[in-house]
Image (cartoon, rainbow, N blue to C red; front, side, top):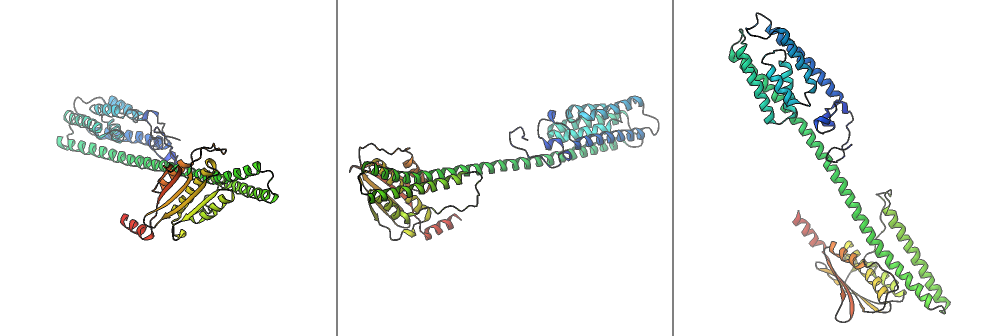
Length: 422
């Protein structure tokens, strides 16, 4: 069930015990009475009739004032006023003003007039309530002046009218304020629930985008290795059996590894996958020698220069970004410059930046391995999310260079930053 704003509305356990306005906050003309509303309407009808009978009995003790309407007409007006209470929610202002005017000539309609005034106070703003209450006050003045009670004075009658009107208006405004509070709390709860669902959806989308980037980085590297080894077997069919068997073994191992990576990524993307399933350990900067050895076994000429004292001292997130940068750079070099020498340089220090630089000579050959062209875009986005930056493009020396600066904070600087934020 939804309300007029389009937000989902949770249905209460016992809607028949609540006012229809709280169950479905829509324009009053469209609301159907709940079981509770029917009970309240019947109770209001009975109370108005009893109060009118009581007022008729009180004014019947003794001779009626001169010019007083006949009792039969008084009772007929009071009965009509009690019947009109069934439409008090649809036309509260008109009914409240009309019953207030009729109370000048009928004492039996006073109970229905009070209930109508209470309904106006519940469903309308204070300005409207004040105008209807003023009509009741003026009619009270007129009735007391035209039909004075010999047992009580004029001002006593006026005081009682003011007290009754003020009490009815105050009670109705209290009920209105309480209902508005409930509706406000309900809307806040619905809005908070909708925002929470939106945050969960955004988190899922971001996680799936991250997994897609990881899948691109991993599979592009694996499949490019497969393409290189398969190309070697295609162009050297007369190679020694040992080399062919070695290349076939590398192709088989890379294919199995690519299938395993793809299976894990698809398993994470499934909606029914368990949320508490531990993730596979991700590669880090300490795995760079293994990555470079794989490229060398594929026939690439890679020089690796490590200017760091301890690879394990690099934070996990920064090290993973550095690993993915080198992996994508080697994949691009394998695609676009298959016979060119590639140099990989890692440097930096704690408290500064971790620098990753990959160079290879520019080659004008057309790549036989297809690519989407989004690898470098993904690397730039990864570096930006890490708080760093990435540059790529040809250099004046005739080389293609990829260089990334990734922020590397040591433990002391990180603790100082956290303490400063606190």
